[in-house]
Length: 152
Image (cartoon, helix red, strand yellow):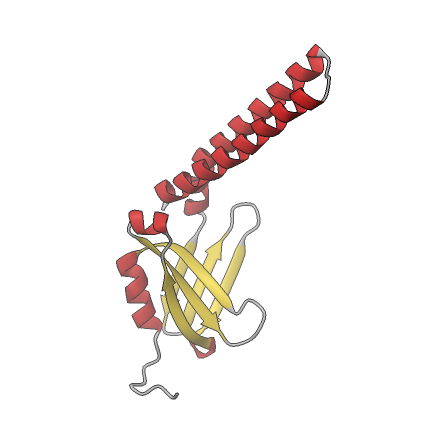
């Protein structure tokens, strides 16, 4: 999970940095700036780009250590968040169905996202991402209703 999140972070940092440097280059071409203003803007762009790169490397392990989940006979409990903690408790009686999704980076690292769809309109789907694909499949089966027949 950490490696996959770092890859995503590096992609985002690369895109943001590219847009930032193209913008700074365009600013230098179209606006006559003093030497100090030009240096200041360039240094600021470099600092922002480096900040995104450091964040892409440092944030995923911190976020991973602060994400927990528990599945029992009563339902699912998910706790996540670094700065703002969020505890989500979903009783089994509110679970409508479960899905598993995998993006290209998740597939590359054997990960999946378990999506829980619940009754109600506010926060009617909850995602638990970064699970091993086998674990996600097992949880989906464990959270499925006990009945053999499904009404259509």
